[in-house]
Image (cartoon, rainbow, N blue to C red; front, side, top):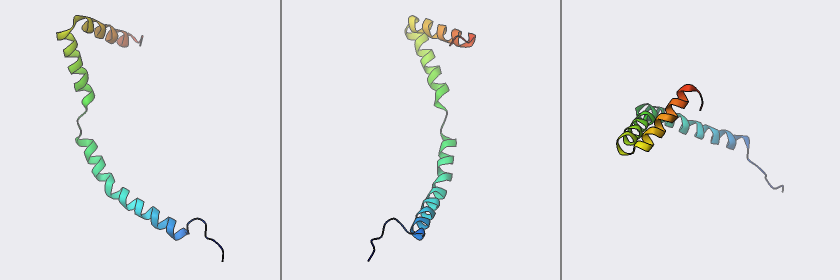
Length: 75
């Protein structure tokens, strides 16, 4: 009797079909969740900008220098 190595074609196809069904069920939920999530980047930058302006003039000056350099293309 020979020992069996690997998987049969049917086992592989069934496994791929199950993975495909699960992915098809999850994809719409993931896409809707991504659309509902707000873009936090702009809000976080604005909050940091406001904090630097009000709390610490050194941070405010440094932030303005970085912004000016970026606009000029130096960074």
